[in-house]
Length: 147
Image (tube, rainbow, N blue to C red; front, side, top):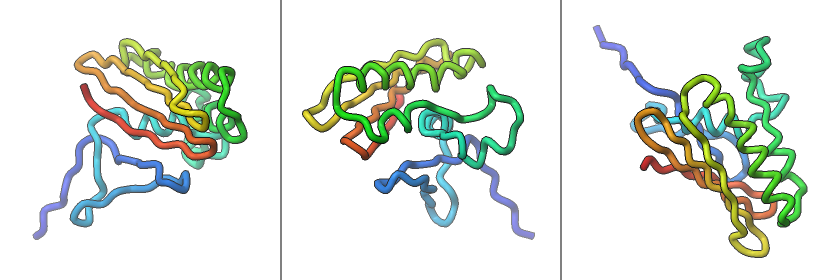
């Protein structure tokens, strides 16, 4: 009898260059994460028509963020930078409310005339995780590093 593989953590979702969700496979198995990677991605980029929102009737459990609409047709400006900081804070507030994070700090900066970068620092009870979002007029990229 073959023993079934067990997985710990959460399925790691990645945002590809086309703005679609992707799953990375290693030796035929989906890559997992013990961090907040997938939860942060869903919280930041979740939109009202996201399929997972159909699985619950609880508004607090739905992934609905203002961030995707904010950056969709925005210009690189002080307003976009500041509104992005606020939208990211709002999208991640539930992590503090649920006790998953002690604090969340969001900052932003202009990378060049076409790009804005936002940095999210999540203080967990046991460690810190930093997420970088780089938005280049229509394309968003996100990366994470555990500190």
